[in-house]
Length: 469
Image (cartoon, rainbow, N blue to C red; front, side):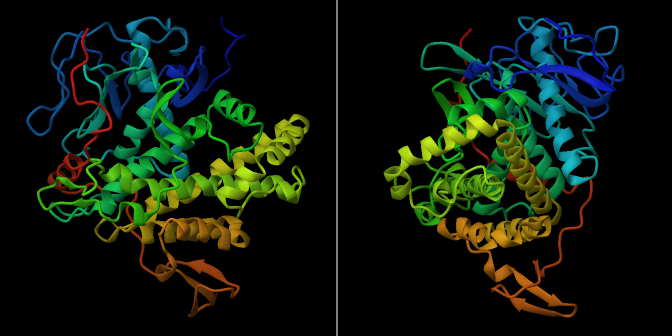
């Protein structure tokens, strides 16, 4: 039922934060396109939703690419006010509206963080991004001129459509944003860390987006009673059901754990352990460190405001200490959260926005041909210091060092104009002295380089198969 009249300058949609995780009602959100400006589909000047009656084969560039020319469902139509939030959730048109709305919301978040409009990296030869809500395929991917969703069988025998899973849509949109902002190295020079960075930051883009849902933030805090060291939906990526997900952001993996995973000259992955690990495994140390920094920002705000006592501040504790004193932490957080829930929510929102600002700075400054985890984390820390978090620098640096990522060779302290000092306890502005990537809007380059990098981004964590039915 509609909750009263809408007073929105933008266009209203209903989006599921995580349909497969039991969020029974989609959340009503306002997106940036002015009400009445979207075409049926939905479609705008950057992307258009195309909903096939049945598409059995995913795009496979350069041989099979948009536009889709087969029969399609009727497009999703706006109501008289130009909004899409009255479409019945059981209809095919809702799948189309949800796909478009999730991608547009992700763009809204990151265009605001980056400070400019995102132009697709393929805009020179494919101006529109074609959005396909459903392919008979147990995967999801994006590429030149398209983003298409499949559906995943669950352990209970059901089917999870990825087009109703915001974070899968946001992850794939994240790849498109990263390609557009940073670009790629020349074909044949793509490194394992470039590919792993893409997977890590696409996951982080999805996590930031999911935390913008009011229902998710409230659920995460209530589920954990304010203690984000506990596993929660904020750390589950690609939720398939209430008990299944594709990855967890809380991995304790280190670079030493994945040091033997190599990218072969032919683009295949070499894993001596036989576990078939690839760029997703190499991404885990970076993702885990940034997720823990989000918790660090959140926890610091709670302590500074006196919402939790210093004895319940688990920052810097070992996992063994957390396990030993878990009951004490649980009681302390439960009591404080019951009294100060709105302040806990504000602390989480602030932590989310701080991490998003750091991610945006990384995107604005990294050069694709010299990208390493060390440079990624140096830019991240440079941004954190500029956001006023310099007092936390030892703790933030420690999160990366514990995972075997050392940004210190790329960081300096600017003591005064014209003089710098190596990272230490000296006071001054934390900087990365290397010249940044000055791309704005689109890092459009040779499409062959983009295509070569994209083809190395395999997704064996989901079955590469057609889904029956």
